[in-house]
Length: 298
Image 1: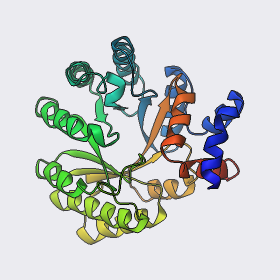
Image 2: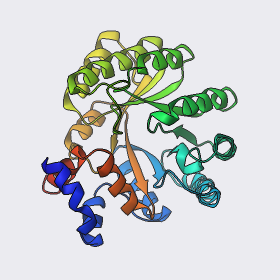
Image 3: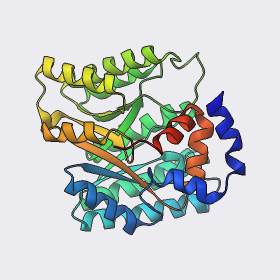
């Protein structure tokens, strides 16, 4: 109830307050800010992936602008001394408008990234786009192996999806999932989501496919490490991933010190306000998390 109240009052909050809340989790508004953040994280031993804020565009012009921004970002990432890794959301490329349009734009981006030696991860969004996103990934990875996608552990279908990706030794980020989905298609209980998450991680590791273990949950970090140890998985077959600004830096640094790969998701762009507002509306539980962490010291 408290978290929902925070979200309801957000439109009344001055813009600078929302920006103050969001700046911990967003690298800045331009590419230069993102590159600085990535360099700083590299000095701390972290890998990075860069993402331009924005999704669910409402016009072809917006989709084209997003495509062009990513083409420019590829060149910036390629010439900077940082991890060559970028994430993108299909609806930012117009998937909500036209599947053909999104396929065209994302193919252009993936081809350019391939030429520049940059890895692209196609993010997963809410359930209306799951099949389209996975179909796009399946089609593109044949020609462009430097490609990955994402599976959300709270979806009932996810184990079947992971088995298919594991069978082709695909590259997969596994996260819990943040979008609000119905009980008919998604687990609502936190423990069920956790147990399914670990099933997905195990499936990828057993198959020898590469997996990004994306979680801030200490339980899932501990249990994933146990699976890695049990299966004697080498460190080149997985990485841990976390969002910029989450208050578990000491834990992430400890993973790095033990020789594990840890990648930080670095979002940036002018859409910080819409991004922050949308994330909270989609999942009010995040509101209390964000507010609480304003006062947490890492």
